[in-house]
Image 1 (cartoon, rainbow, N blue to C red):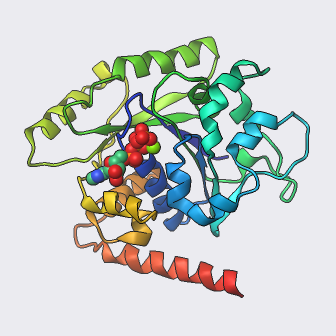
Image 2 (image 1 turned 135 degrees about the vertical axis):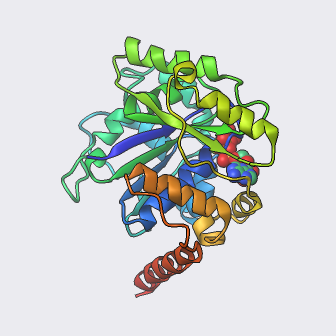
Length: 295
Ligand SMILES: Nc1ncnc2c1ncn2[C@@H]1O[C@H](COP(=O)(O)OP(=O)(O)OP(=O)(O)O)[C@@H](O)[C@H]1O
Ligand SMILES: [Mg+2]
């Protein structure tokens, strides 16, 4: 049984997609089977994971949510990036989905229905085929699409910038999740706040950390690993690659790997560990995949 986790925040540009993609890749490098779902009309996750296939994709998350009728057999919009790392591409048409969902029966549960669909090849439900299913959400809080993501999820990870605007939208987000829990009877909860763009030299980073460390106030724990400010994050987005493909030995790649290790319950690595190792493991995995594809 997989863990389904949404990356959600009211606020735009707080590293939802960066965290969703790179944590997904990190878990995959640790041997986990991962599915990444792009629900944002901006399609940033799809562009980063696999732009070429995205452009040729026959079906996307939009086709499924828009046309799907329960019991109907149709090809699933699931594509493989690397063996064990799959994704559901987004679509720019998702900008219409909130209005369209309004008119649909079961409108809050359509993404959840998708995860309960049986894969004709394996005979298993999609939600049982992976260790982790990550849903990248669009900014802007309370929309029907984001409600679908929450209803489908066990947990939410809230990426939180270690900067001045980090408290913006938090009360709204907490209210929203509470409403989905109580009014739609879904057991979703916040797994934790993930501090990103962390800079130990800046006073504001420390203030934000102190605020989010008060679990009673913010209603969920702070992840014990912070993702440092790292220029490779912006560069990797420009090159449409994950950090592990673009610069596996950078600080943010190391931090996301430590968050992944924390998620699967591994103990902290010794200080003698060298991040270059992930470069070697990632390269071997990518090369193996390329050879298999060519064969
Ligand atoms: N640790 C980091 N250090 C430096 N830059 C970062 C870091 N994490 C993310 N960024 C940059 O911040 C920008 C926003 O990140 P991202 O697209 O992941 O945010 P988002 O929350 O998904 O945005 P949106 O709300 O538009 O979907 C990107 O340019 C990304 O490269
Ligand atoms: Mg995004």
